[in-house]
Image (cartoon, rainbow, N blue to C red; front, side, top):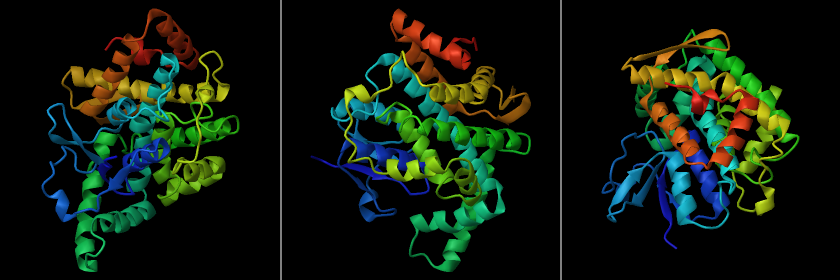
Length: 342
């Protein structure tokens, strides 16, 4: 079997997300060494800092592909065994919502803690450039670190971390940790007794928040030691043996999963909707309220695309499946995600 070629770094939650998917699904892969000469002839991705797969398009030409969510769905079609997407379309949609919550909301906490606090900035600025240039001199690393740190701090305006939103992000992270810790007392994964795409998305963010960045890792150990242990387990689930009966049932969603959906409705949903409205109005700024507090950030076109994907997935469901999803969304306060007019 031809191995998939992936270029990424350990400090990227999306690289870690995709590596965990590949290990779990027994998909053969190789990770390209940064700056390896044989990569020179390969196409350049639109976003350099994202993990990149080099895959054939419909014409057979190799493309640089970076979006983790479409990649997981592509691999579901290309590889039959050990699916990472629930077979029940209702549960698959809930899995999509929680995956996007992790990718697009928890990542705000990841960026905030990494580039807001001095100890975290020092660690990330010192280590992340070395993953790309391990043998560079200390002088070279110092220059790379300064430039990389400035670039990442400048990107906070798109992620949404700023003095206005800091308290919202930090309170949401602590609530998530407590809710996820409670959930892991009832079942080992979000999607039941086998992992879904949402599990790998949460794992990707927590691989940084709970295992790398010192301020957020200390909070994780305080509020969610079980979740800290979970990250280490999900890193390699190649030995986990999934069964169809292991998926959570649409008729028996645990209260702890509903609490996590409610947290998404409290934070992620209003920001996604406000961002979509700002994009529609050609505004460069998102303004809304989250949990009763003001939220201001730059508009983020990619998150507009994410919301569209979710709404398209919902629209493709049968009428009976939509009704089931609606009952779950109403119970968790997330109905606006697919029904509120933009």
